[in-house]
Structure formats: C-alpha cells, structure tokens
Length: 553
Image (tube, rainbow, N blue to C red; front, side, top):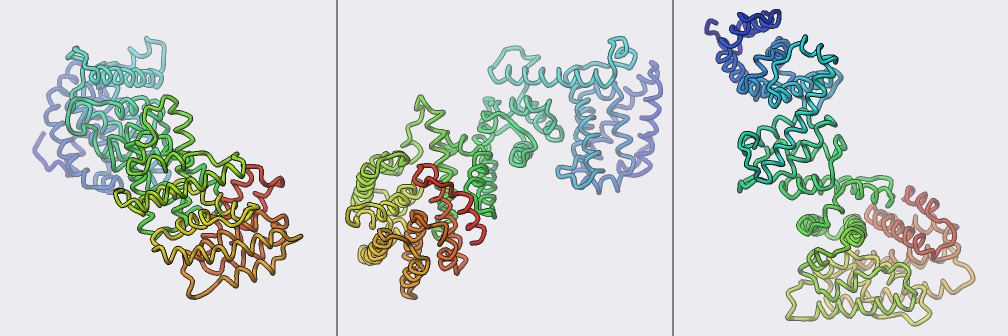
C-alpha cells in the first residue's frame, strides 16, 4: 500500500477495502495476501491506537467514522486474529473505544458489540484455531454456540494457567509471565462485567507472583473496585479481600464511599445504615487486622476533622458492632487476638468494653460500668502510659453502648446517683476537659439526673414539665458538650417513661431548635429505640412511632 498518514480517511478506506476483500474469499491467494500485509496492518493499528488513547470513544468515532466497520471485519478474519501481535493491537484499539460509563442506549449497544469482539479475540489467544463456518457446521452447532463455548473454555484455560504460574509449575510452554498476567488484566477491563469472566477476575486478584511490584494493571484494579461498589459484579469474599490488601487506593475508596453514603442517608434509619454497612463487605474484610487498622485510621481522621460529630460517632459504633459480631462468628479459632486490632489500647480496658451489655441483669451491668470507669481513669492517670486521652476516648467511642447504658442506669437505678456513671458521661461528651471543668459538668448532670429521677417516680409525666426542665438547663454560658449530655439524659428519660408516645413529639421539638441538636437527638433516639427493643425493656413496639418522630426532626 502507498504510504499515507495512518489517521487519514484515505488510509482507513484502503484498509477497509482490503478487509472486505479478505472476508469475501478464503482462497490460498487471499490467505497469502493477508500474511503479506500483516506487518503493515499491525503498524497501522498501533499508530491508530496512539491516537485513540487520547480520545473519548465518542470523539474517536467522530474522527474515524469507519473504525467500527474496519475493526469488526479484521477481528473475524481468523488469519488476522490468529496473529498474536496483530490481535493484541486490535484488542488495544477496541479497549480505547469502550465506554467505561455509558450514558445512553447507543453507548450500551456499542459496549456489547465490543465485548463480543473481545471475547472472540480472547478465545483466539488461547485456542489458536483458524476455524471456518463449514467446520463449525460439521460440529452440529451454530456459530454463536460455538464461540460461546470456546470463550468459556478459554476462561477455564487461562484460570488453569494462572494457577499453574502461581504455584510454580514447571511447564514453561503453559506458564504465564508477569507481562502476560498484566496484559491479561488489561484485556479483562472491557469484559469484566460479563458473568462468565468473574472466575478469571477472581483468579487474577488472587494471583501473587514472585515480582516485588504489583503486576496487575492499576486501571484494572480501580475498575474492578468501582464495579464492586456499584454492585455491577459480585465476587467471592476472598477475591475482594485480596483486591483491598494488594491495592490500598481501592480500599480507601471503598471506605470513603461507605462513609459518604452513611452520612447522606436521609431516612435517619439505623436499620438502613446497618444494611448499608453489611452490604459493603468492609466489616467482613476487617477481620483481617491490616484492613481494620486502615478503616479505623480513616474513622479517626473523620472524627478529628469533624470535631467529634455525633453522626460520625454513630457510624463508628455501628461499624464496630457488626465487625465484632463477625469476628465472634467467623474467627472461632482466634487466629488474630482482638488486641491485634487495637494495638495501642489497654488490654484490660479493651476486654471490659468488649463484654456484651445486652442481657446483663441491672446490678451486674452497673457493677461492670464501675469497672470500666476505674480502668478508664487508671489509663488516663497513668503517667507512664503511652496511650493518649484521645486514643482512650476513641476506644470508648467504638463501644459507646456502655455510655448509653450508663445514662439509663442513672435514671432507673434505685440507689443514689453514681459519680462513676456521671464521670463516664462527662468524659464521653468532652474528653478534653480538665479536672475542674469535668467536675462542673458532672455537677450539672447530677442536678438534672436527680430531677429526672424524681419526675420518673411520679404517677405520670407531663410534656410541659419535661420541656421546662430542659429549657431551664439551656444557658448561653453552658458549653456545647454539656448540652449534648443533657439532651442524651432527656431522650433516655423520655423513652423510659410509660407515657413517652404521648409527650414525645412536643418534647423532642423543644430540643431540636438547631441543626446540630436535631442531628444529635435523632442519633441518640434511634440508638436508644433499637437497644430497648432488642433487650425487651419495652413491651410495646416502639420502633415505628419513634421513627415517625425522627422524620419530623
């Protein structure tokens, strides 16, 4: 062929004309002509690929209107598809035309067409068959059936070769080199959402060679992670864990995506938040200590940047709850001790917080709370300890159910108000307070608790009385953290009162005059409702009514 610029319309028309000519006959002369032109064709495709790399699929089609016809005809020519270097050049061009985020029916249809071509080329890369239509008919199946079965067999063959390479099998002809594995991962990107390809994706993710650097393509790893998060593909738990262990950006992206979805859930439903956490697979993956520590570091940074936002605290508590459940269920052999997940925390304090509060008799629960407070104070007051106040508080945040239990114990116990429980609440809501400031908070919390206990002992609770009590606590000089503690006590009292469903709406509306207060009240209310239902402390079904209130907050 005459030398013309590879991206010119004339060059495209000449190669398209040749492709049509080659497809119309299978004579020896035609086959020889294909072989004669293969070097020039490969050079043309590589040059075109360089242009396509810097274009969007739509821009490429606009620049080269006949590129689809040309590539389609070339792919189905068995002599061209059977030539390894030319086949790789074809796959590279098709990959550039694939829309990673199709926006309309045309792009979706184009993606399907590209996937079919890539599946065919994929099969040719392993089978090496130069089949023709007559040979396929002699097998007693249609061309579509034949290529479908060939594709599945190709996937199985590649998985077998991957596993053989992984375990160091000596068959040199069958083994895959690091470059082969990387090229395979790139080839899988456009077809990774096809169900038949999932086993190959899993085999790639679980493949670990002897190379010191990551051999799977970065874009492949990122694409697979995005599809997992968007529920476009479903892989085994071991494959997802392998992805996150070998590619930190994918793990961080999955954590931040979960965090953002939990923050923006508008239904204010803990059930929806819990389901979102479960569906993310992150609690399961966190049973691996390396994953858990990264998740926890991101939670820690979010807590610091949000200045202890109540919604962030709720997310940490929910995540920890589901993680511990899975740990207890799936880690029966205790391959990793729990202290491995909290390496900078006091072992005694950690074990105390890990005890399940649900189902404990009130006197046992109260005694255990005193033990938690003593261990917290020991850690904070120990000058030799390397554990910071923030680190101790951050551990308490993970197991905040004990704080909620302390609030309920203050209001329901027949014994006198406990300084230990007041200290625990004061520390939880403001760990940075000095001793004098914390004592002041405890005095204010004691005054409110005593009045709430007296109110609880009465024959009935009036909404106006509770509202006046709360309004009396509002003071411009009182810091925000103390007001958080006061609202917590009021919400706990409200839900423990027999007439709560009658007075709840009026009382809650008086506590949610600001956005910050509304967010805080909704979280405390939701947590308390769930726990009271789970422990059976409320005989009536209160969830539906309570969440109606949450929607009004």
